[in-house]
Image (cartoon, rainbow, N blue to C red; front, side):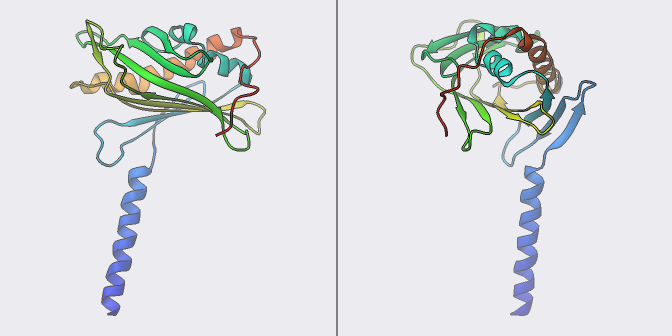
Length: 217
């Protein structure tokens, strides 16, 4: 009976360790301007998730307005060709269609996402989430391949340093069979260049945030 108890205890510890390892983030790089890039591979998945952490002197309004401005999406998102609203009227809410330029000889991608923006409980952070969806009126365009699965999240929070702390999470399957160099470009170069460009253009926006009355979730 005691040996069985020891076996179950050991098994539980092993399962916990395996689960923990599967959830751990591995640091891939830190840029000279302090942008941290992490990746992890969830159980049963072939493509890595990406997490980017950084702090900025930009105000919450400046970052928020740039991230939710569909017309300005191509100004900072790496290799973005097109981004336009499909439905919805509120800034930061609705369905959006986008196109991404992939390096030759790969086929360019297009995607359709539903986006929502909200405060966390306690209103200490603002979250912007986008998830891939299907839409009967928006089929894949000629010359593009539809991204079958996509999720990204921005979390904006005031930090103790007086800056804005930003966490960016990306889980995306571009579809098809991609070579390793192309995946690395998306993970490293794409994420970092998007953030760096965002930090360049965000200070240009001096408008007040449209989310003073945003709902809590």
